[in-house]
Image (cartoon, rainbow, N blue to C red; front, side, top):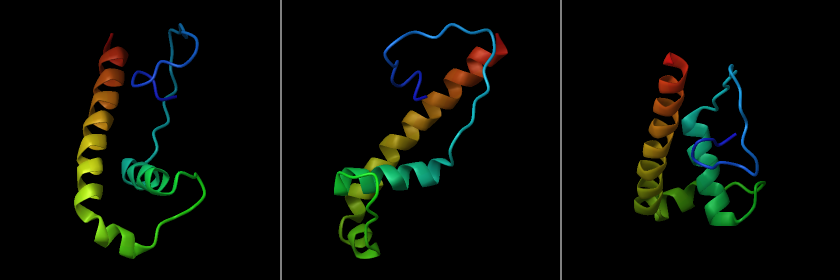
Length: 80
């Protein structure tokens, strides 16, 4: 799930959650590849990272904030 960032097509009500979280580093790298190739299966050459390092850094900084919000949401929900 990407909840709460993306809600999905129907609400899920639950009193318990098992939350598995992908390594943010891997996820952000994968998202960069998706953005640049428009596929889920193609990986970029290292030279692309170097050539567009400012764009990758900008994307990574933005995505890190989304990851933080995601974690804060679930930590807050689990404390209740």
